[in-house]
Amino acid sequence: MTDNQVIHSFSDFAVEEQALEGDKVKIESILNKEIIITRYKIRDSKYSDNNKMCVAVQFYEPDNPEKRIFFTGSGVIQDLLVKYNDNLPFKTVIKKIDRYFTFT
Image (cartoon, rainbow, N blue to C red; front, side, top):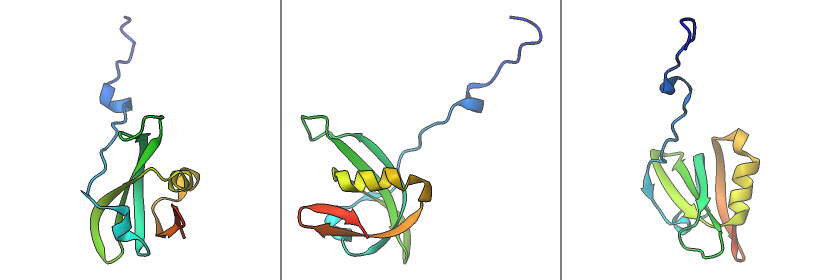
């Protein structure tokens, strides 16, 4: 080590991943209601044998700023979140069409 070498602190460059906050709710309880999605995380599902992914979505309702979370294995929801990630936060309504969930 030389005298001129700069020693960085780990906290200067490491970004700690924050956990999603909020009470858990079932996606069915918020169908057809306007919500504001703030963050999400996609991870391996605990309930699947075939490497299926699960998404945890943090949101709140416009008339209630309390953060909440729902979980879904919906590939449509996951794809939409990834595709429109740069637009977060955004307002949406979750609809169930036949056997899948989507945003409108």
